[in-house]
Image 1 (cartoon, one colour):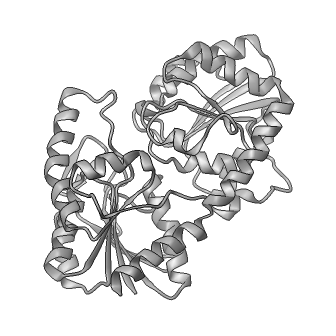
Image 2 (cartoon, one colour; image 1 turned 90 degrees about the vertical axis):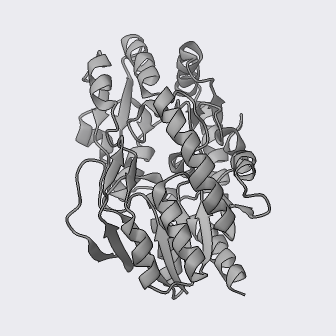
Length: 378
């Protein structure tokens, strides 16, 4: 099969949907398929000069973007014409509501190519401003309705979002295929120098993800400031690409020796070391879909404290860690300390999470995706 993925970002950007595509593409290529990625030439900070390249067997085509909406959406209509010029068996678009989904869906419709769409669960308006909510409403009622109508199959990454996909016309086309986790994170690091390289000792509480307001990292920083005052052996790590919150976190930080705000780690082996150096993973978001970091933490054997928002309760319960309502700082603090102080409980969470993560290995997830493509082409 010749497959075209169309997505907002690709390498070198740190991005969840991008990582999903990398993992699925890896499997598809191994199975003898040809994979192309059409994406924008924006890396969230600057325009990317290299427009055409091959990365790990994937043909990457970066389209010139003519407009940016804030820092999360770009408009690149040339993808429409580029897809019309090429022949594919499957066009697979990613991230609902964005302009590239409309352009690619229209191209698939005109060429009579099988069209698959993965939403990546963008459905909540929590904490969006008036303008943001208005733009989302417009895009959902135009781009989503048209692209869902033209799609042959729509992949929901969590059962929670089925209600929204049906609302915008996707009823009868939905397949639930969750995100996955790399085999890498199940492998134990023999010599782990992560703590040593940071010059820290003791216990690590980890946040790993985009430093974005949606992630609730400001709330976690408030809790971190309290805990490090009371507990000399505890350190906090905030690690990820800056999406507007890094400076805020640095200003809020009252103990720069034991609370670290660090840039994204791109080397996946270093990411594995980071997880395995930590005692607990915290995801205090007010909006989440089916986060890759949750499964990576599970595979690494980390207990988790997370907000019970959107898709999260479908993936974790009281056997995996603690669910704490967004903004409940008192309980967030208590649950973090509970895991740090109760070794037996933490070990039980760890065993449960490793076992649960086995169900989400990327090979199995990618196999389901390839099976869906073949079904459409019968």
